[in-house]
Length: 166
Length: 414
Image (tube, rainbow over all chains, first blue to last red; front, side):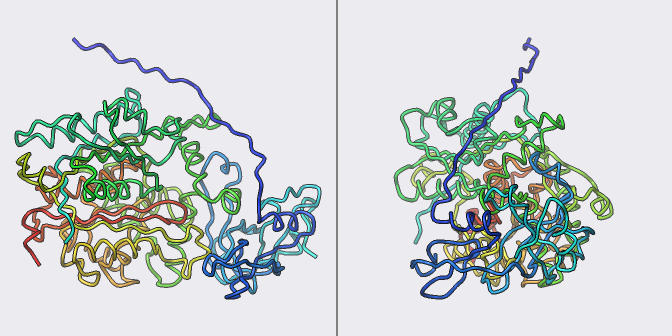
């Protein structure tokens, strides 16, 4: 006669703290935190603008130079998230998508906030503008800023916890 | 001429939401035992001691609560003092593992290789909600770029859905209803697969009415995470003869490609470029034609983590022209009794997704179809003797692997 199976489960956790260097990309985060500036990089050879920035052009294997980008751009594609990882579930529903900053060659993934978060409000082709956290809240991370539809810019920039770019 | 390498043993455990009675290495043992039994069914007597090497497919250390989980499996399987190598390529881990096991045997460094995938995700547990899924998704979310994407809530669903949305913007396809048909088909196919986690007889309306996950993906458009293991035993031609294998399934093409993991860097965001390059490489190796592939194979086990992604895969794997994937499923083409069945076992939507095990399961399932051993979900006719298995995964579906298999009859056909 086989023995009746009784299961045993234990509570456990894996956790690691970091002090992570941004290396050659440090300038992007410093400029974001201190000056609300968004910097891409431009390949000295082919002229491609990398955003997010890369210190070297992956196509030409040559150095790329820092270039300041505008705060405005166009939504290339987006979605609204209603369910997800434990880390983000407190934020749902949230909008996010790929934004091509004016003059950039590729698109940046970022949060897209709206007072009226419906798919049509954040669809492809919509113009957006960056809004930033207040200076004492900015940490030099991607979460220091987000995008809003251009017609909502003043509303978001005037909220007590946020501010507009210069 | 490529070396002839065959699948001679297939072992797949049931795909289940939770195994409370097994650890990941115990699941791996079960699949290995099943694969050995399958390899011996014509009278051979191979044991784990005859296996010369192992290639392990395990995606996520955080699921297993163990770094380098392969070495602990290696011990449990009694495979000490032999080479074992781990592959981890996101959702494409299974397909990539088959490719590397093929390479081990084809290169001559192993005559008999164990190709083993396992994953056990639902030990992750979110204390806040008292459920597993949000914590499983946490463990996966670290697959996105930790600096530029993860902090803003990039996850598997939000990553894949943007590509599907971009594809829709370009081609007006797939519509929500066309995506729902994939869910109907694959949950339905799983009704005949006793190892599947999510067999369901549902309608398009049921899918459309299920809760929204990530616009426009709904609950029933998404696969469930699963716990399982799958194993294949690969042998070279000499071993196939020596062991008197009666129904070897030959691997004639292995193709893989990694596209840019940053979706925003791609020329077109509505393309899963990795699919296209992996498929073309596999077809070329197998001497098949990208433009005629649908007429050259009997069935495909596709990677349908999300319904819309399967529709796009019809186009990228060359089954139909770009923009016509939605129309093809509306016409019934990929259904079990259709022109060229896709995911007859139920795929990921029907079976569940046990990441490292998934692509090895789908390769095993395609091989079983070619042998005529798929059981209740066996296709009525296998005419061409060829099948495809497809794996895709990683940030922005950056990794893809495509495997082409053929039975003895298929080798003789044009």
